[in-house]
Image 1 (cartoon, rainbow, N blue to C red):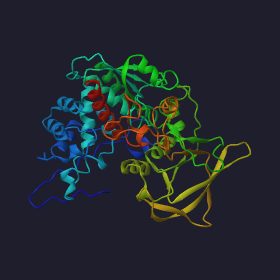
Image 2 (tube, rainbow, N blue to C red):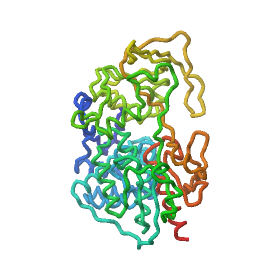
Image 3 (cartoon, helix red, strand yellow):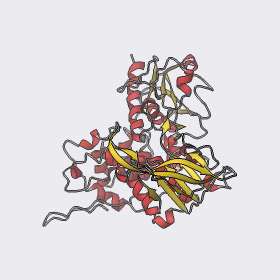
Image 4 (tube, rainbow, N blue to C red):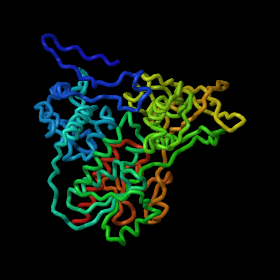
Length: 473
């Protein structure tokens, strides 16, 4: 628990406003969103903490360059709708970002109020969520100013955060934009990867509908690389192609027992539950194994999502097994905190070495070894080293492997002109996203490997600027 700094003598300082949320015991068994969001009173109070710096560093800390002081000032003045519109000048997905963006590592990290160590930073993410939700809930949409139509066509591959952001920026610049999505729902990782209790799918759908209202065309069930190739898109009259197909291929540990019944990749486990709504069975006819004792391997946000989903699917015990300590865990602190509150059991400094099955081919236990931390590795984190003779077993009936994702190979495999790195990511210029194939740009996880939603959005914006410049030459 972080203690609020004590105000100076004679001054009453407003503390950072906590967002109300469901009680842990209740939320651990339902899929409703955990935080309730700010009330108008809480939002105005929190916005009043912003000191409106002359040289605000928070804008520099935002990958999509939102005018943060301006929208916060509007909230303070109770101009909530105007605040939402101000955010949308740079960000087409504000309700998403307000929920899943790691503000604590970006805009809030450089907030002057918190940088001096005398106070906590302004809750920029919570305020962004409030403004976006207010505009949506009050149906107070006004379409932004649009550039005159250019008649030039751009294809966007993938409707995840990178693709949707690029689409929003390009349509506002006057170009004709068509998004090609392989799945039957738009949103990419926002709909298949992030659980309902963290990001309600109605929120994602509302953000997509906003882009459609701007004029973006959406083609679902279209697998670029199979249904249509990049070369065929150019032949159809598209002048540029942006590839934002993400990193949706799972990784495994290659340990004995990974082929047993009851072993899932986090991709499959979360996709079944989120996109295909297995949690609402039998209303939605999607089967999923509802384990009683579930072990999730990994320490990132995807691992937290999987372990917390297992609880909500009825698990009596849900474990996180992670080979390093809590300090090195890459998941957001807020997600770890929520998992701990809900009763997730953390087996830290622990490495799975094999999954044990019964005579019917189903998981019955996982064998692990204790670890200790050595010198830092290339990631900057201390390298885990196995402790000899420390093996032990945990009785489980389901294992979810959440150790990272690989880039989707469909487009590189079908388009040899696009060069890739050894791990399958597309090689693209950092500032523009331009690939080795003329007219083809790429950004997000397909370039960086699995990263954050907001970094993918930043890449989408950068490529949109570059594509616009190219088209207008």
